[in-house]
Image (cartoon, rainbow, N blue to C red; front, side, top):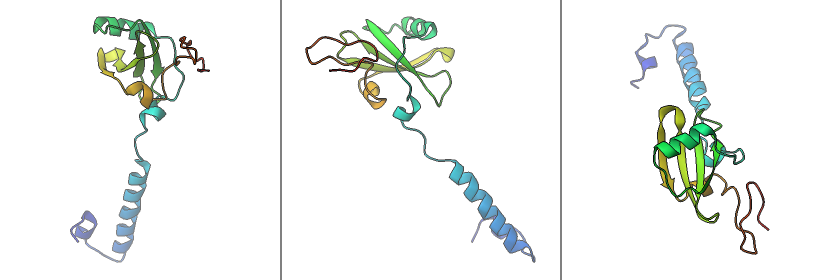
Length: 135
């Protein structure tokens, strides 16, 4: 073996030192679980866009958003998912960071990856409203 623990001169307590190093390493590695999915990161409800997100989208010349909503990331402070639509049926997704003046998108699948659009067309073809379930 060529590990750090093998380079330590083993005395009466050497085996205990190896065990302790192994336990510490296992504890550190187990605390580093898998990263949350997008759906888990944006688990909250869709909301009306905040002024800082609206300004950022305008500054970055994001067009075609007759209507848009945002979800706040629960794992990354200052990060937002934005759902944008022209017609209430087709949604583009963006990730926005107003504090650092950055937007990524459009992504045609992002809105679906985080739980679906704020609302969907109703059975009669009309368009719903924010957080209203389709019928």
